Amino acid sequence: MKQKTRKTISKRFKLTSKGKLIRGHAYSSHLKVKKSKSRIRRQKEPQILGTKVAKKMKALLKI
Image 1 (cartoon, helix red, strand yellow):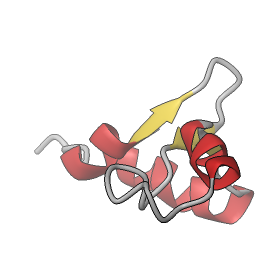
Image 2 (tube, rainbow, N blue to C red):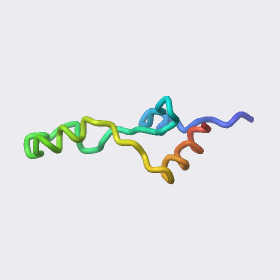
Image 3 (cartoon, helix red, strand yellow):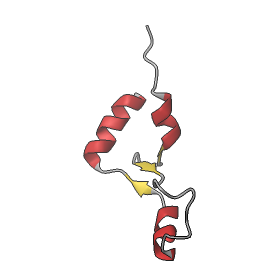
């Protein structure tokens, strides 16, 4: 039987052209009044996953 990809992981992570995985930041959708402007700005940028975590996620994505 064919292996299926984990849909929750495929929705949260994107693969770059060089093969790295990127993800969005948590805690950035609402309640922004009490967060500093620099923190909000930092959370807009995508986060590149580390090598160990990326290796595990790629296995779950069947890449």
